[in-house]
Image (cartoon, rainbow, N blue to C red; front, side, top):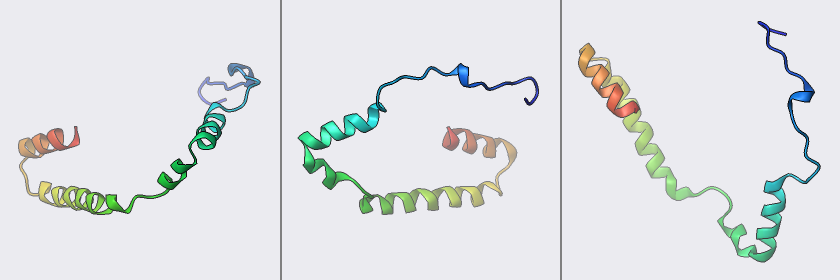
Length: 80
């Protein structure tokens, strides 16, 4: 027990049914086996991911030269 917090096995409700995601996946794949072709990585995302990482790193380097209010404005508008 850390700082008054306790975890017990009675805090959770056990359900006797199968895990819903696995059974739903099996049902969908049995009706539509062509969905298996959609599984796996999508290489078409690579250019977008590289552009985003490059933009983020460039802005991080650029932000070191900004005065405080401009840095805050950039961080707020880009960082969300």
